Image (cartoon, rainbow, N blue to C red; front, top):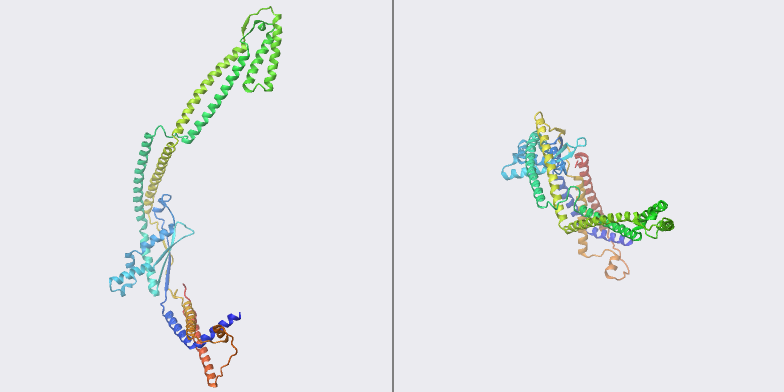
Length: 516
């Protein structure tokens, strides 16, 4: 903190040594800058707001068919281009007498460009009616009367431009729609021809209406898997039937078939049929199969005991169980053969689809794209036809009255207070710059002079200790002169500050603060 204080003190001493030089530059910069600021011309702004229902025929008809981004900005830009066309600008110049000072074509050209660049037209959405626009017309000029006349004349041009806009839009919309309908009709025919040519070229490779290539391949693979499973099951059933037939006698004794043993024979037949059914579903180790085999063995033993008691006949007859199993065996063989044919056919289909795996998706994609383009073109064509009918109805409605509404919301007013320049800010900036320049110049001259103003600077300069200081013995005349210098310096500074305060007061209290 002490070092900072010493540095500030050293700067003050250096500036004070060249105080009259700094004061001179301070006064010169302040007076010059304040004079320039005071001579800056006033800027007067005139604004007007108008309500214009620019719901042209094109926009409702083309809604959904064209991109509708930043509609308000585009409408404002279109309105600005319409209003600020060269004929309109030249008309405004003539009506406001701005051409009185123009003597050559170059000056007229510069005046036209200056006026066109100075007029600002902005569009704002109306919250109550989003389809309508509120336009703000703004113009700034150094002459308040000129700014007022320009905006007033611009509103007249605005009114003349908007009154004839609806019928022009109707005609333009009808022509545009007719061109678009014809264009889309041609495109629709071209799309239809392209689809026909594609169908003719790839008639045997196109997907059907229900499924595409991948669905057909997946379905064929699934059917093949089911057919192979059915074939495996049929082969297993046939093997089981062959096993059962090998265990059953083709002939049995006639005595078993007699009345005495008829009940036992019936039971044996029923058990053998039941056993065959169980062995088709389970293995030989299954408890039901084991118990059925045991019961069948007991019945056969009982039949053998009954046989000797019969008349002793040894005549053999066909075993009905064997015959039934033989029929089932034939059916199983036929079913297995049919499944074999089915498996081979679906293997061929799957192989055929896989062989076209590389080309088929591309063909399918091309076909889908053609159909999609056709559908989009057809939909757009139908919408355009509907819009043309709407355009016809709108045109008939326009004949009974204008649909463009024009209303001045905020009329132009003669400005009394300028919007600029901001003189208080500029005056303050000049004061700050003058102080900076004066202080900086004093510091520069002090550095060039190379004088040492304190004991600390001397020690820092030579890196040697200072043993003592000798004070200056001023004479009475010198003291009076120093006091006079200080008083003159303070009075001069206060005078400049008072002048600054007077200028601010006049600008703020009498002229008024700028509105911009």
